[in-house]
Image (cartoon, rainbow, N blue to C red; front, side):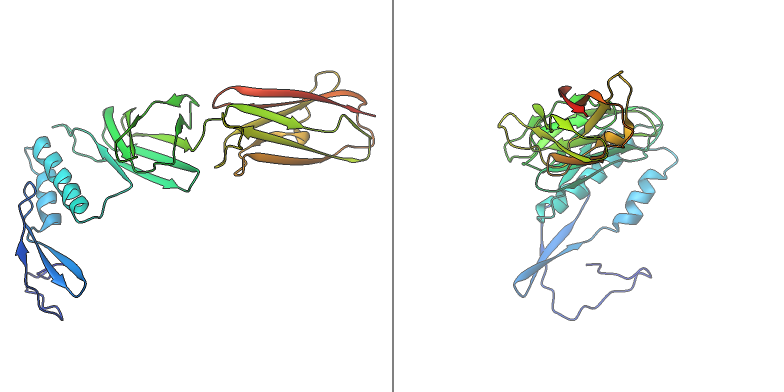
Length: 274
């Protein structure tokens, strides 16, 4: 709660505040007071004004900027307002533009985005409080990303982010270890065909959360039939595909190939069009 208005006037709240001063956290001075069953934290600093003065100073002090920003994070964490994702990096005298990180997650998957607003490349360490994630992969290059599991169940990952650029990391509760395809062996022209592609982990269970799949169907002469397949990301780990076989379809042996590009595991089966 602010103690003063934007005009510098004292704010009067509708309850009595008996504040107990706390130890400073870096440059931040603060106090705690009890209100009913909860507590109110009072910051004595004009945080916006002080941070603005630091980053707009003619002679930028990157160490001071970084310490101020980290102090705010430490204070929020001390109050139990721990963010599910934090990012550590070093400011420079050339630029104190921020590096930001955010995560969107459910029980089985997450997308971590790290944006570097600085003009030069930056090495960052990102901590993500998502214990359910067991496998990370770069969403662009499809390479696995190594990480360190921390004692509290969260993990940290070290990334290099180009200047004015971003890194997008996908996380899953399991690593795709096998692709399987269930399809009929024969289908008549003019009929519908239904096949199923499943991505499973090392435990044999479907990898949930939307693992990437690339499905390719080819005809008897090796020709690609795009309407029979295509890329997908089944949330359940299982993709069911129904296709209509034209009455003038080429008869003969067809193949279905499904690959999980994030690990390279694939499966290939065939069916005959009569």
